[in-house]
Image 1 (tube, rainbow, N blue to C red):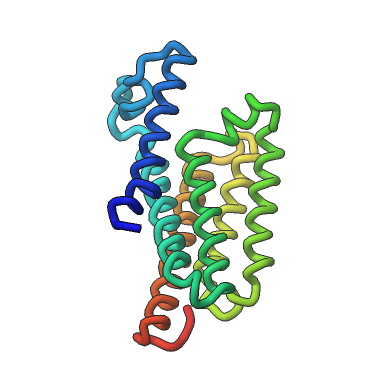
Image 2 (cartoon, helix red, strand yellow; image 1 turned 90 degrees about the vertical axis):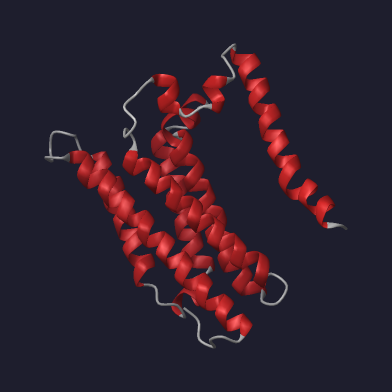
Length: 208
């Protein structure tokens, strides 16, 4: 298969499918296409720094997804267990990226009959599944950043469950803990991917 054919299959066809789906959504909802193609703040005419921390968090989710899936694509034919570790990390990162970008557990899932609390439980189980099925690989890594990420995510969820009058600067605690947790998760994926790829290339023999 030529490079052009590969690019058409894995890059341009999905991109065109997303574009066509967006056109269909615009027609179905009778909304201007620009409402789906432009930046949300340009559509709503909001202040340009609104959502700053959330946007930076989404960027870090995307970084973590890309790093983990790149490591998976390199290692999948040479080390199945190592590849699975990065595949699950990449898919979990991508799911949480989509949730943050489109407010899935706050808006979409409840509209489909799946309550926000139920979906938070599902995400918690997915996180526990990631830890359980990769426990051997995680034990071999420097997992301090992973522990920090999980603790900070738990803190963010816990604060979110509290009445907003209980804490001064409630969203600093909730969203700040979540943001630092995303930073920690990205750092863990990057650290593991870097050292795994170095080991594969002969640059380093130890795992993260």
